[in-house]
Length: 164
Image (cartoon, rainbow, N blue to C red; front, side, top):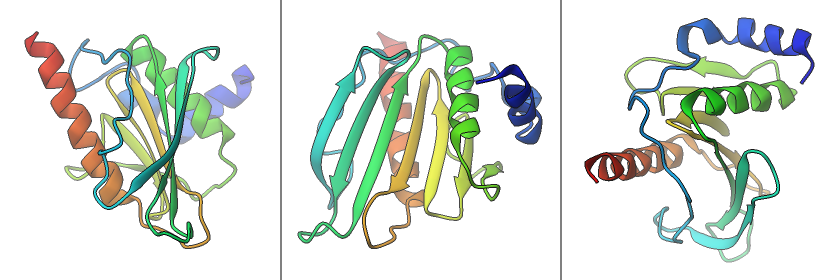
């Protein structure tokens, strides 16, 4: 991303308020993978781990109905640190073409910092991970509750790692 665009994205989304700060300190998750049971009533159709990108990206497609009209694309970027995750978050925000994307805050916000577009796209960072939920099928699926439950699962994994 060009430096001018990066500064614009940082300013637009108030990066000074959240950049480099995570709720779990320096604890990170390594070797993230989907097990296939993360989302109740959803079937993991395919998953691809791309270790040739920096950061490593895990792309997953989930199906809710047999016809494949309700699809959910979930991308997880596994970064080396909270700051690297926030850099990836800024990069991902810069790639979005909608001016309607907003920062989500308050006690119901997902992750350490999150953004959304209505209830059809959620982008958030939790520790060293950046997660993007978006619709991928013909039928629009509300992604907020699904993203929230996934974030809670990430929090449990981080807590488990912290205790080790």
